[in-house]
Image (cartoon, rainbow, N blue to C red; front, top):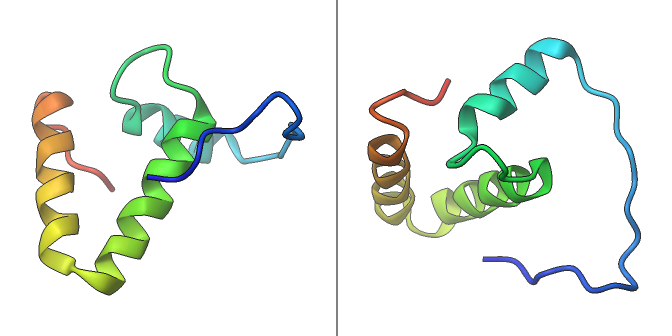
Length: 73
């Protein structure tokens, strides 16, 4: 996946609609997963879809199993 931020990395705040936040919450693999981690995971999946759609699908299925079958919408 993407590189891990360092201490010198800037942190910013973004505004999202409540519905967007709730959808991000559903994508978390564990309760303390940060929104940054969720977004990076989404970027990884999107980039994988371009390069290797089968790999992206396998990754999504793996996440679905971890999230007890909840489908990503």
